Amino acid sequence: MDDSLTSQLKPAYKRVILKLSGEAFGQEGRGGGISIDETLKIARVAARIARSGVELAIVVGGGNILRGAQFSAGGEIIKEATAHYMGMLATIMNGLALQQALESLQCETRLQTAVQMNSICEPYIPRRCLSHLEKKRIVILAGGTGNPFVTTDTAAALRARELEVDILLKATRVDGVYSEDPEINPHAILYNRLTYQEVLQRDLRVMDMQAISTCQDGKLPILVFNYTLEGNIERAIAGQPIGTLVKDSF
Image 1 (cartoon, rainbow, N blue to C red):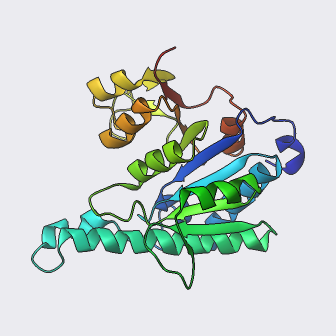
Image 2: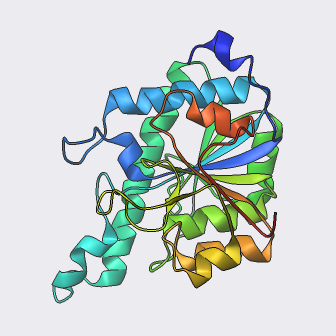
Image 3: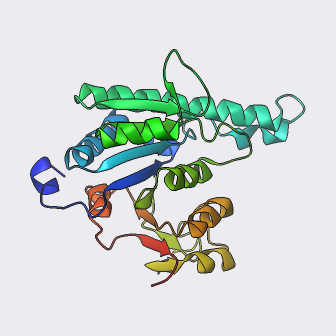
């Protein structure tokens, strides 16, 4: 989607968090690692969103490089908590790549992490993050919460509550929330709308349950959508009916 088309989509929200999994930074079907092309695609979209006036924070995952859970079977060698810390470092690598891609597009950014690395990024401090957002800087949030056994989805929900965003955008490779895994069951039902309670009762894998409960407590809406379709992130920002909207009631 080019800038002229983006300008036709008026933002529906003032401040948002976009949650990107680590897979968004890799090339599908080519194993792990960071793809510069895919990272630039994300950066171009983020740049257009920021230039439209939206205050944008991006929470990044690290699964394209390393998942803490992949070491769980080898607990005698690498303890599970250590594996989770390794996963946090992977999110910071993705954050650095995205920051460089954004800055190559002349976007002002800040990389903040829950794990202090003062020589390469800022510590996450909510007031400082809000100040950056108000100055229209794109803030990249990495390192999860800084604690093991907590997913980056939960980190995104917590940051969204702290920063008082209007909506949490959960970017995925599928069109929204299904009754079952659509890759296993082609007849799985795609839901357009769900309440938090429906997600919890049906054990739907939107995000982990802690993330859903955090959003429910703050009545923070979640939009789960397919970011791989061109223009879909901009459509999500514009409030168009795509994906699955999860909220308190309809």
